[in-house]
Structure formats: C-alpha cells, structure tokens
Image 1 (cartoon, rainbow, N blue to C red):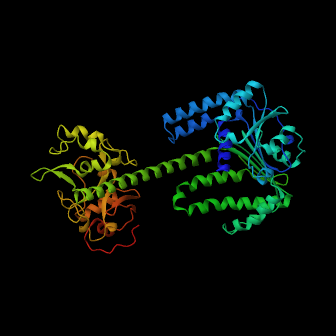
Image 2: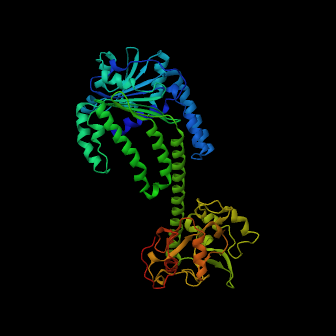
Image 3: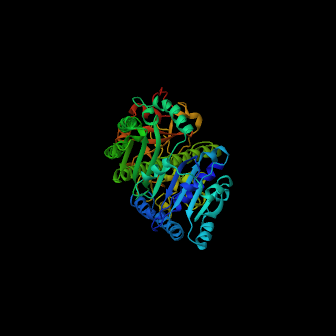
Length: 513
C-alpha cells in the first residue's frame, strides 16, 4: 500500500503537468546521491493533453460529454501548472530502497514565494503527498523523505558522468525524459534473470542486450506519441549484438501476437509499428539507437484497440443482460412454480403480451409492470404507449435497433423449451439437463421483435436453425436453463444446436464450439 500510494502521487503529478511555459536549463546532478539510478524530467510546455482528448473523442473512445469534462479539468490544472512550473525533476536512489523509504526526490526550480504557496496547495490535493516533506534550498523546491532531503538541499552531490551522458542522449524537444543508470547489483541481477526470459522466446538471447549494458536514455511525447531510445553498451561489438537482438525481437513480436486469437485483429497495426521502429534502429556511438517520429501507426493501434475494447465491453453487457433475464426466470420459477410461459394469454387463450412483460417484477421493473393492462394486447391504445419504455436489460448494446425492439427471445414451437404458448415450464420437464438446454437466445438483428409483443423464435422446422445461423456474424450468446450464459460460435453444427434447443430429446451433446 505504501508503494502504491507513492506511485499514485508521482503519476498524478506527471499527468497534471501540462502547460506552455518555455523550459529552463537545470542541472539536477548536484542534488542526487551516488546511488541514484533513475532520473525523470517532465517539461510542462511540451505537453498538450487537450489534443489527446480530442483524438479520443474523434475515435469515439470517449463521448462528447466526457471530452468536455476532461478538457475543462485539464484546462483548470494547466492554468495552475503553467504559472508555477517550468520543469520538474524526479530522482530515485537505491539508498531509499535500502532504508525502507522507497520514495523519490522531486525537484522544481523556485521562482518566488507565490509559486511556493501555490504548489503547496496544489500538491496537497494529490493522493500520497502527505508522505513527503517540502524543503527549499539552492534555488530549488524539494519534496522527499527525511533521509534524502538534507543531501539534496545541500547540493553537494558529486558529478555523475554516466547520468550526464544518459541525459545528453535525450531528444531535447520531447516532453518526458528518462535516464536509467543501473547499479552494479542491478546489472548483475539483470544478467542473472536474462536467461529465464530467453527460455520463453525461442531464438532470442537477452544476454545479447544485458551482458554489457551501461545505461539507458529514453525521451518521448505522450501525444502525439514520439520516442527516442538509446541503450549504451560497453563497446561497438556489444552494441551490434544488441542490435541483432532487437531486430530479431521485433520480427518475432507480430508472429507471436498472431498466435493469440483475441489479438489477431491488431497484428497488422502492430506490424506497421514494428516496421517504423526498425526504420529508426541502428548502432551509434557504442550504443543501440531507436527513434520513432511517425505517430500514425501507434494512433491507428490505439484506435483499433479501443474499438476492440468497446466491443468486448458491449459483449459483456449483453452477457450480463442475459444473466439477469436467466435469474428472473429462476426467481419466477421459485415464486410461481415454473418458468414463465412465452405469452400472457387472454381468457380464451389468445396471446396478448410477451414473457418479457411478465418478468418485469423480477428485473426491478415492478412499477413499469403495473402500468400495463394485462387483459389487453401489446398493441392496444394503452399498452402500445409503453413500447418505447423498453428496459435496458432488453436492449442489446451490440446492435443499433429501432427503439422498443429486442433480440432476446425464447425458443418456441414444436420441440423448443417453450413449446406451449400459454403454459409455464417446470424444471423437472428438462430431462436433457438444464446445462444442455437453451432457455433464452440472442438472435441476429434481422430477427428482432417488439419487446412487448408475444413473438419469439419459432424453432420447429429444419429451415429455422439454418436461417438463424445465416444471420450471425461470429456467433451468439445463449442463456441455459441452469442460469449460465455461454457464447456459441457460428460454426456450431445445426444438429448440435437443435439438440440444445430441445429439453427432452435425449441427445448426447459434445464439443459445443
């Protein structure tokens, strides 16, 4: 929890830093001890997160309301940062890790007392800021633990040629710059751990990269994403080995990704990013240099990944809808002694309203249920006014349907679980097993019905299943009589699907795709 709070603190500061003030040249090394292995520089004037928000909105990753709220929040924070921060430095030392205080030193060049007051107020609202104390000295403002504050404030740190060289490798235009100079212990640990990684990726030997590693310099922009990476090796021979390792790794990455079913749709985008990375990959000054200035491949991947994430979220919402419907069926069974019949019938047996109306009290829609006239048909002058008030649980988020339409249907007709239009279904009649009998089906858009109408999927006849499968893209969700919800692929054999639709056919069902 201690480390998590600190991470939240540093991350929040980094996200907050967004402005347009010119950077000030500062040398942080006098304020860092000899065991510092990580230095981060953040420059507000080089960051414009409003462009990122606009991009997310253009790709419909966030809606316009969210974009407006994010823009206002960023603008509010930006105004305070612009006025008070030119640049911020963060240093991490192994001394803090060894002393039990794994906290960084955070440094901001001091301007005036008004700036100090404003930053204290701003950072006091950042989670975890109470873990650090603030001091002033040598023209800087410092936040850090007691164990590191005095040395940092005194500014008597010895020159660090390795840190200086790593910082020189940065692209001076990038907004975030990171230098990593591992200690000898860290290098040894890295070399010992490298063979373990190599065993997981055939054809790669991570020691080619880690054996003679000296330091790493990384600089990048968050949006649009651009980056420069320099990995310093001990000599030119080691740099060439590191180059070969990186080239092989980049070649292997898309191939490994293609083996993951859920990632195949983004393989092409990843391949374009790999091609762009390989263009900027070369040996330079006993080190491995990689630059990426063209942001478009990464932006395309972000857009595609966000699209897939949204689709997955919608699929999960549909699954949750069906789970709620299945639970309502079981609660109805407990209360009424059976699953609801497909329709609410009139006294003379004429179907009036759907089962979807009958289970409204079991999906927390009792108020809506009481507004229906149950002795009138779904399209009576009174009842048809309620069609547009379709509950969210009946709306499939994956489809754009006319308001009042649903694709959650039960199998009716000869052989289906709900063969009798006006008769409730008892669990003891499901002799094939509740886990092998479909109760509710997510049908294609072309089979959508008005939710209040006593209309469902008529499964009798060989053509019914063929027509259903033909309307699918990849497959469909099905709620089974035991309450579970499973996805069934379009490639399912028609005879297997027919068997799943019957409650008492006696079929042996195996290998449901």
